[in-house]
Length: 310
Picture 1 (tube, rainbow, N blue to C red):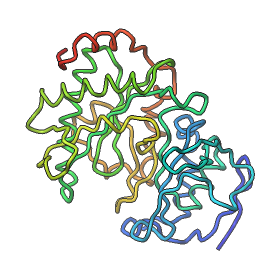
Picture 2: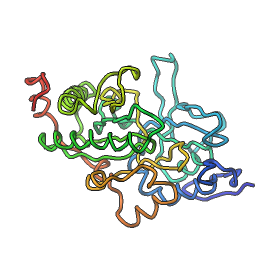
Picture 3: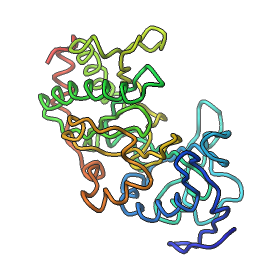
């Protein structure tokens, strides 16, 4: 089965009845429809950012692969940005998700997890945000692990409030939780690493029974891993509203802090429920696509308080 959808450019779609999320019964056609419904909400968070995707051509239980370089045979209208990779010693032509047609093309490619860069291509050395990744260590008990991540996030919220920093939580779409801060232009990844390192050590001191910065999984026990290293050049997290390869067809969902306190769980936010949520409450991550806050005074404070005390 194939057809053509018209957005800014004609997008050929194929195999619309292919089931990508078997447990939820979500087909490629539904995924494409999700992208159509969510396009205006998603694009401000992805435009002009390097995109890494995970593709699942035959659904979430079959083989998958990461893709950074735009594939051969891709439409000429797709916009890309070339970056030299020191790791692979070659140029990579990253896709830029700047329009609805690109989102539809990605859905047809079964690119089911979208990871935008922290910085825009106008200056890849200056992130527009700071991100903290809270990752439950114990798998197989997703809800319990997520609830513990929420407890760590609330400790972090208190610290960020004390520093006068706005913060916006979202589910990873899987078992984790992510906290973002929008920052003004002019700061480097080295600057943001000062803040993420300081706060990681501070939160571990505040909540040592549930939080750790131990990188080796075998040494974490059942604690939440406070990953302050993930916010760095060439690294990414799942983007807002991207689907994830989980049975419920959950998406990465921005939350209010009240929702987090009240005990929401990631499986509530799916390809089928998110468009209605946007209609009801709008984009809770909208501040992330606007100019962020200055952190110069906070960086000065941290440099003079290296022991992790507020």
